[in-house]
Length: 368
Ligand code: PLP
Image (cartoon, rainbow, N blue to C red; front, side, top):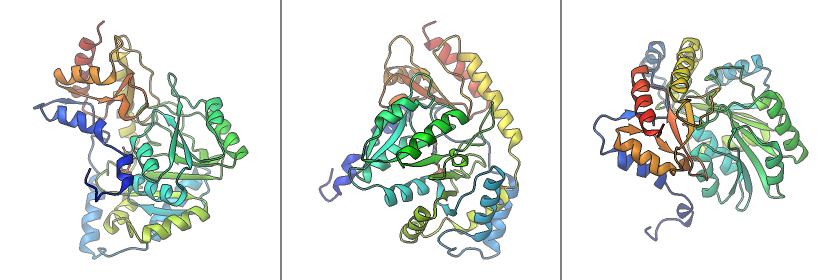
């Protein structure tokens, strides 16, 4: 690394994903089950609203914390779910919210508890802030292991990060699990960051937010997945005022505000009923699960649009992904999301015909 680069950059690397993309670039028309975003497009209404916003001159900076109409709409939406958030700000995606939150909270040496498997960004952002991710193994059920979480708490523990429904496992934490977690967090006075970006992608029971139970929670959510707006960069953060005030202060000197036209479009997006899309994702989950369950060690995911599947025959994740790529199938090795190398992630946010092709290739590779 060039010596001009700050030391903190040596704390993170992107080798896992890079390796997959390097291998994938050799493929012409792969069966792609690697992409972490919905396969449907933004609704026409939302597109029109964005175009109108541009034409109406809404092209300037907004308030740093976001336009009041959108913050209010989110507040009301959350209150309907019995979640009362003291303060809400609009961010540039959940990624923007994570960056601001970690920067405002983590001192060098602070520990952050992260259930493993985890969304890849947590580990790297915590490290780049000088924090220490403390991983809590959730294999094989991917539920939150309350005892292990409590054992992992030390004097330096600052935050517990949870993500339910979870990327990459599709696990959804039950209300009881969240209550138990909240009890521990309260006992040790620890903030919980709850990344709820997949909260609409839920196929069995209603999704519960830990913010309903535990006040000392920062909720992060956004428009990327629910409304297929990944490229629009719109999210929000809600929680205690003492934290949001600092995050808004920092946004002023970093992102400034989330894109103005996108904020106005977000208002429209929130009126869009996504129930039919969620139904179709449940069907996709079932197609994938039924196609693979007799061939792989696999848990039926209850949310999001991923499956985290054990590799067969004692193969490492990278060995198995290498074989899949040789067969024109793109999936992601588990170590991108975990300290272990025993699983792979597939994303079933794709047309059903792609899912059937993927299932056929995976069945052939299963060794059964
Ligand atoms: N959190 C999780 C769990 C995700 O899976 C993703 C994207 O894949 C993000 C956050 C980032 O979301 P955004 O596009 O809102 O920055």
